[in-house]
Image (cartoon, rainbow, N blue to C red; front, side, top):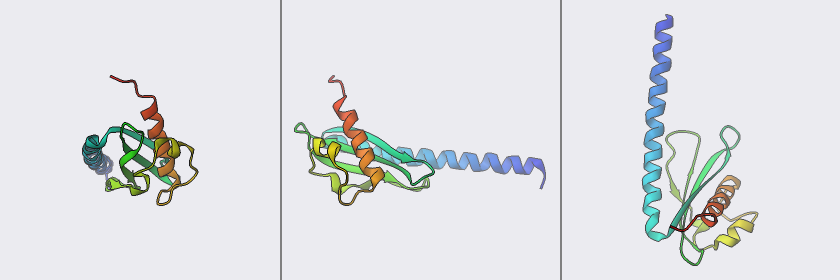
Length: 126
């Protein structure tokens, strides 16, 4: 194998990965934008990239501080897609911030939800 072919393979692999990452982020962004009809939207992230994976959680919060809809993006690859996170729907944001566990959520998802709640509380009104 010549050095040129090796470099070409690395560049091609990098371009494919960049394209797939772009498609994944656009798909999740589209899902997050759809949450806006349910209330104020906030996104949090938790976990480590190589130790247990990362979790992204988007929540839509109404005026009373209740989660009306939630999405999660978890996984190891660029083929991961957002899924509904029913375990958060109906909970008050104040309860999410103080809980140690929520049925149906992984540790990373709960930490990402707490992160999203923190962002929502620090949001400056327009």
